Every structure is written in structure tokens, then in C-alpha cells.
Length: 139
Image 1 (spheres, rainbow, N blue to C red):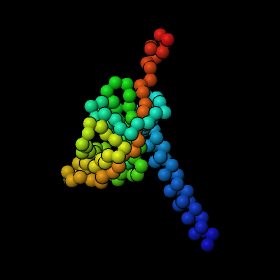
Image 2 (cartoon, rainbow, N blue to C red):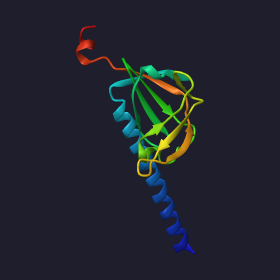
Image 3 (spheres, helix red, strand yellow):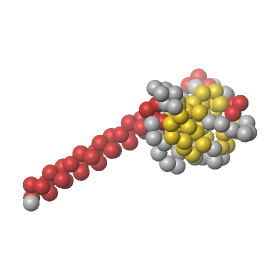
Image 4 (cartoon, rainbow, N blue to C red):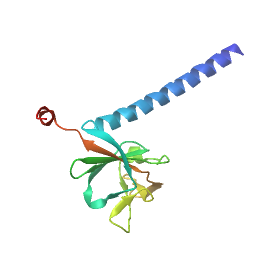
């Protein structure tokens, strides 16, 4: 009995350690993508499509939208979007010129060209570019 309990505890420890390591890797990936930005504490429900320069999928829960100019928005999906982090590509169909937290994205499966899961977006967390070192020195 003791041996089975000990093995079970070891397995649970390994699983929780692996999960923590995975979470740390995701946080590191997002931190690296945002190393030139600082969080403003503001959130938006929508962003203008014409202002989006590019998007980067961080994982199954997180998309980074780099905007034209000095802003970026992190969108944390309210639920896991299966295969988004693996495929790193998605599409959307909109009736307005804004991408909003009520809109849906569809994972693009590059191996089969068949649409993957459809997932809802979350709020957009605003980040702004950090001033460059030479700009800070001039203050």
C-alpha cells in the first residue's frame, strides 16, 4: 500500500512540475515578445483592423497583436483554443472594421487546409513601446 501511494505521489509531483514548467515557458515566450513594451493597465473590447500590423500566436490561450505605431495588445482567450499554439495561424470573418472580444477566430490547419476549431476572443490588454535608452537620457 505504501509503495503504491508513494508512486502515485511521485507521479502527481511530476505532472504538476511539468504543468508549471509549461506555464513558465508560455510566460517566458510572451515576456520575450513584449520585451520592448510596457503594460498600461488599460483594456479594450475592440481594436481597429487597419491598425493591426501583425499578430503572433503565443499559445492556445494567447495572441499578441502588434499595432502600427507604438502599441501592442495581448488577447487572452477565455478558453483554450485547441491547436492554435501548434498551428500558429488563424482567420476571422467580420462585418465591421474592428476585431472585438465577441468575435470568433478559426484555427487554420496548414497540413490539411481544413478549418480547425473556432474560438472566442477575450479583451485586449494594452501595451506601449518602452522609450529607448537615448530618449530617456534626454529627459
